[in-house]
Length: 84
Image 1: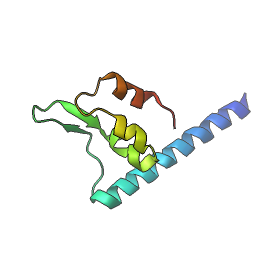
Image 2 (image 1 turned 120 degrees about the vertical axis):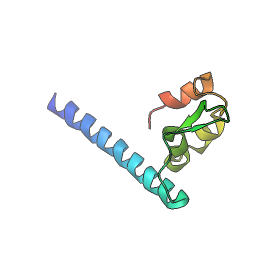
Image 3 (image 1 turned 45 degrees about the horizontal axis):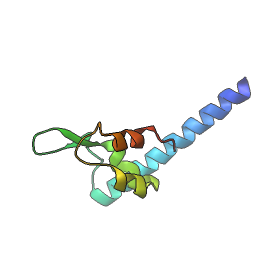
Image 4 (image 1 turned 120 degrees about the horizontal axis):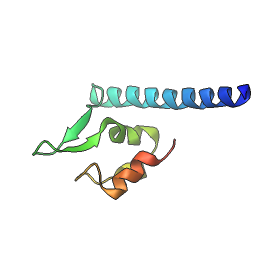
């Protein structure tokens, strides 16, 4: 059981490190961290910061396939369920 807990903690730590590096890369490119979300002209959320980080996590194809018209669209939901 301890080995499984250590493995899970290590995996979580690795994923946090990837997100941290992606945030730093985004910041270096845009001189700021990503906003919580990007809204359309009506104020409706289109993309969250997590979607904006996809290109910096080597997930360009997933980012390209994300529809910007609505956060809850089926192809966008797939973007949220993929493990890194």
